[in-house]
Length: 86
Image (cartoon, rainbow, N blue to C red):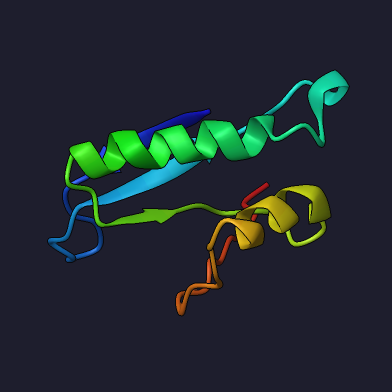
């Protein structure tokens, strides 16, 4: 689990954390490890007075999407766009 705290981004002044990386050894999947890691992360971020956690997930990553939806993440109103330059 890896996250970083931002105190403002794109003109916003609210405390936000970005969840960059999450992973569980496949031998331990479906045992609540991911939920436990995320729950502890949320406790730690609340202590830092972070108000929101954001992340980006590939739309075909159904396993991660299922966990994130299960713990209360929902689609953002912002749309992430990318352009390949090479």
